[in-house]
Each structure stands twice: as C-alpha cells, then as structure tokens.
Image (tube, rainbow, N blue to C red):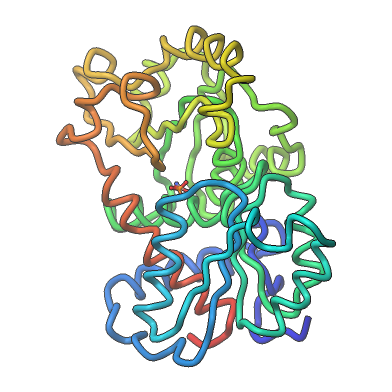
Length: 313
Ligand code: CP
C-alpha cells in the first residue's frame, strides 16, 4: 500500500507497529480535534469511508459515520451477510473495495480475516473490534482520562471483568502512554491472552494483576468494566450454559454501590451496558460515572484516527 502518512504503520489493526510517540501524538491530536471540531469540517470532502460489519454495533458505527459526515465526507455501511464478503475471498473483495474508498473500517469476528482484508486493501484499514483487539475504544478511553485529569502519564486504571479484546488494547495503549493498569480478571476469553502485548507492558512496568477488587480500586483513580459475554454470543442459544457459568463466577466482581461506598474512583464502561451484571443500574448515572463522556469521545477519537491515517490532518 502506498503510504499516505508518516506513520510506522499505515493501518490501525492493533497498536503493534505504532511507536509510543505516535500513539502519544495521536492522543494529543484527539484532544485537539475534540476542542476544535469545526476546524476539520472540510477535511474529508469527496472522501468515502467503508464500514464493514460482521457483528452488531451502536457506538462504532455511529461515531465513524457521524465523524465522516462532520468532516465533509461520506460513510458506506456494509453488512457482511448482505455483501459478497460472505461468499468470496476476503482479499479480493478488499482490493475491490479499496479501489472505491479512501479508508476502510471493519468489525470482523476473526483477527485473521482482518489481516486478510488488510492484505488486499490499497487504503488504510482500521480495526473496529475483532476477537483480539479494540484499538479505537482504547484511544477513546485514554482521551477520556486525559480530558478528565488534564494529563495521561501516571494515571491509574483498574479494569475488572473478563480478559478480552478490550483488555488487550488497553494493555497496549497504557504501556505506550505510561498509565498504570491493574487487571482484576478472574476469567480469560479463549486465546485472548497475547504474550507480546503483556511482555511489553511488563517490561515498561505499567501492568499488574490483583485478585482483591477492593484493594485494586483503592489504589486507582478509575475503574473500568465491560460485558462478561462477547456480543456475538449474548443471545446465542448454544452459549447459555457458558453464560450462566460466567455470571455465577463474575457476580462478586460487579461494580455496585456497596463496592464503591467509600471510594472516589471514577467509573468507566465501554458500552453496551448490561445493568445488573457487570455494573448495577444506579452506578451508570452515579456522580462518579464518566461512562457517557467516554462513549461520546469515540467520535473525536475516530475522527483523529481517520485524519492521521489518511494523512490529511
Ligand atoms: N464499545 C463499542 O464498541 O460499542 P459498540 O459495540 O456499540 O460499537
């Protein structure tokens, strides 16, 4: 792919291939984009983003599509099942697609399929969440902390829940930005733990694990939780036994009023929320919750990513 920007990687599949200073610079740029939304109103004029979805979405679809509209461009929604991606070779379909659009965002079930799409594409590819990573979410998460406390380096974040794709991207981005991440993850999704990602964070001393949730939270400024069941399995009849098992194991790790009664920790969640499971309903709108600011920041983070990858910022 001819590089249209000066980044080490022309894509955002995971944070691998991005240097720490590129990630830091992208975060600074996201802050700038948020504070100066009007500056970028014409930057995507005449450009199209293709958004390919194999899984459900609210925030990823809305933020990318609204982001392109705000920047004067256009976004096409492509459903995997009603496009010929489901019938054909992903690389060939991707090459065709990339001859029509300036940039592609894809939410695919399998990371390997995303790599095939990247291989076939002549334009930048953004991972809109696969089984292993959710980099766009992690940038919005760091943007939320950065705006909340003015600086990012040295902040302390506790993630409680299942070790999943969101966790991998959080480990990557926190190690790049000097954020201390404490994981309280009694359960790990199948094949979700990635040694490369963990090794870098351990080398940089940004990652620790804790089994005592109260202890973990007492040392952190932010607590972050996520669904215990991945979106594609949530209503799958074949997954109900595993779902029941997870709920039983994870219920002691719910974010609720009793857990946070003497705490000033701020509450984060990447949404969609399952009230009564990973978080009790009242904590979503608790005065310590920054969940909706975090979700809103997806828009600014997405715009910054698009602008950087297209090299038009
Ligand atoms: N957090 C997130 O990616 O939301 P959606 O699944 O709704 O896109």
